[in-house]
Length: 85
Image 1 (spheres, rainbow, N blue to C red):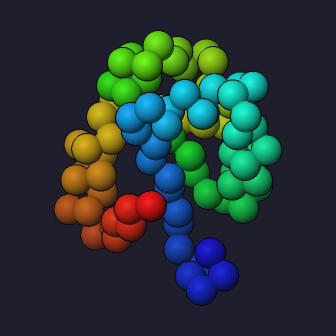
Image 2 (cartoon, helix red, strand yellow):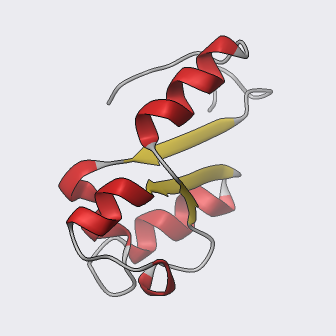
C-alpha cells in the first residue's frame, strides 16, 4: 500500500484459507487491520461451502464473492492487476 497509495486493494481468499476468515478463527486482528487500511477482504462462496463456513460466521466487514476464479478473471478483464500471495 505504501508504494501504491492510490491503489484499491482487494484480497480474495479461497480454498481452505477461508476458514481463517471466520470470527474467532485466529485472524480477526489481521482482518481488522486490513479493513482499517482500506483493504477489502472477500471470501469465495464456493470454498466456503466446501469448508463449512457460513457468511454469518465471517469476521465483520468481510465480503463474499460467488467464485474466486470468476471474480479474479472479471476484475482482470476490467483492468485490475492480479498478484498471487
